[in-house]
Image (cartoon, rainbow, N blue to C red; front, top):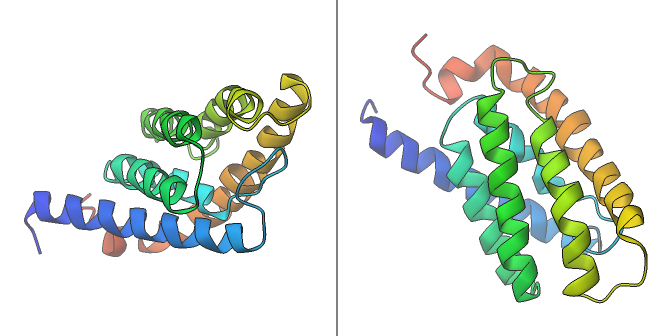
Length: 164
């Protein structure tokens, strides 16, 4: 399969589908939302490190996951926006695997506290929410993200059809 558009759409769709499944799994353990959350699917925010298709993949996956898990409308909008901004940042920093996972951490730690406060009316300070959301993102995006990067790097040419 050498048609780049088809490959791009297929990769984005697969990433989105995996994101939705992982979010549903985390939701089953009550880890996907709230003041303290570890959304397993956020590990996929490192996908733009490998392919630009990771940007629409994680963004669409987040949008669908937020809708099917019954998130409040501000969470659907702003949670998806945080994921999009994080994915764009990861793609922009893709030359350095050690800093590439940082944008999703920052985007979520800045945006999601406001969602928790104003969409879900959860008691607590924005600083507390930034710390707890940020900690969950460090676990998933950075720690698990580095593990995923290490696992995919040796096979990235085959998995992502990278020519160089």
